[in-house]
Image 1: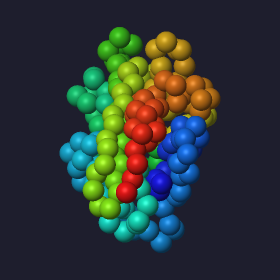
Image 2 (image 1 turned 180 degrees about the vertical axis):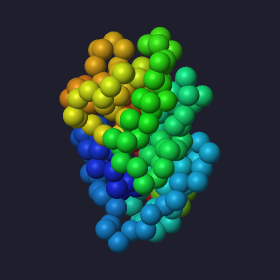
Image 3 (image 1 turned 180 degrees about the horizontal axis):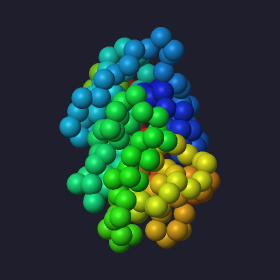
Image 4 (image 1 turned 90 degrees about the vertical axis):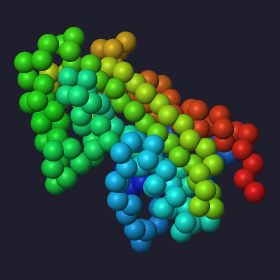
Length: 194
């Protein structure tokens, strides 16, 4: 199975969640082109990536699209999470922009939700899809140095810690990607590709 992503953080999370299966994850070949995310939903982008890669590969392809929706910002950054504000910004600056936009917003109104949509494709056809969601809140400042993306500002309510402050195993048990991948692993356990 090939993961249709170059995001090393996603690769690490998905690989850890697949370790209990008979599936051996592979990375995209270095020469593989990039898929331009133009979908209006996480599902659109995950399907698009999966089909783009599947059209060029003979192995099953697993694609992910995920992002953060903040209630006080009307759902931003949403499907544009990786390109929020300006595509050229570092993630650190993106996180700062989110915190600046939420400046003065009280804690109870800083609710946010991570979403992940996974699409599995083979022979240029979508075979199965799963979705995961994780709700929490946005902190006042970045905390922790684990993870990637918005992990350092997203607080998991039952832990009181950001995703960047917990181990990969703890994150997988709580996260949107973990939920989507557990559902995908259940499907993979009974799937018999032709």
